[in-house]
Length: 377
Image 1 (cartoon, helix red, strand yellow):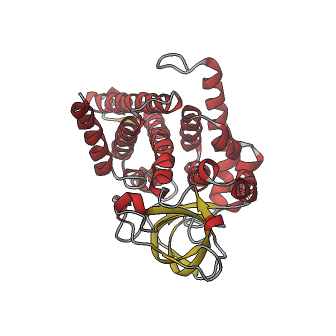
Image 2 (spheres, rainbow, N blue to C red; image 1 turned 180 degrees about the vertical axis):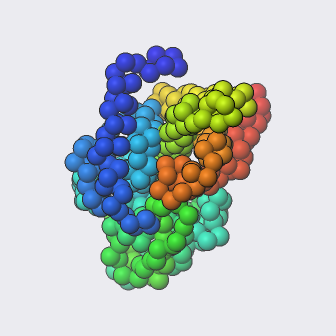
Image 3 (cartoon, rainbow, N blue to C red; image 1 turned 45 degrees about the vertical axis):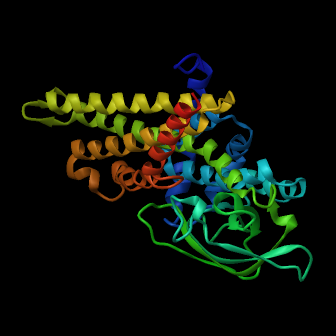
């Protein structure tokens, strides 16, 4: 990437990914059941080497991957991203034994990972977790997990969960530990939730689920940092997912308004329509550049990654909502028919403004980072 433009090789790779997602992955996605893990789709992502790229790419390459897949098949993008989100803590904080046991299956699309942070009373305020880890020395140093998790993508069908629980070394965020919990651990149950978004989301119940020192990711009491490091990587790429949806909606709108006859001409001849499309394109481009800048900051080890990541996710997800909504308006009733691209995007685009930190949380992070700089000076 040179400045704010992609290089020829990057452009070619993104074009190949868009074509692959439309031609190879979308048919598999359409055969899947909404709200369920699509294992054939995951297997294809593994076979194509795309899941491997999640774990070997930098932040910018991850953004290009997610944006390009989202353009042609949002289900493929989401399946890939959820594997990365659930397994990234294992990659970065797990022991050699944990990585060897779980990551090959994730990369191949055989094992399904999940990131279990949110709770019924602790969504945006991640430091307010209530899932409790009670010390249990009956079978060596360990804990018993009791409580609930909610709004967990890939639950309850995942093969393992990265779970964040309160171990109480200190108050607030400093007393949280990350655990790798296999789905077959006794006392762990879950149920699917019927959501607007078509990807799988569920809740988990922990009834004295046993975990030991070998299940800890990183160190006891350091789990909040594990979660934030993963989110700082994936927040810009959530923005890339949003940009991919916005670009798909924009291209559909350009095709529709340039060919749809109305009032003695085509829609594109109407100034109100042309100006709206221009606004959609400008906002999409601004979001794209901010996402790339945030990813570049992450790859370069910049200290302002939290602020940049929050800005990228905020602008890109809000922009995608704007663009998709206006695309639907310009298409009219046809865009609301079940199975239409924009009907699909209209359901998909709402959730990213909430998950991995709602827009309001991103604004809070941005403000805190800005004022921290003032205080330091």
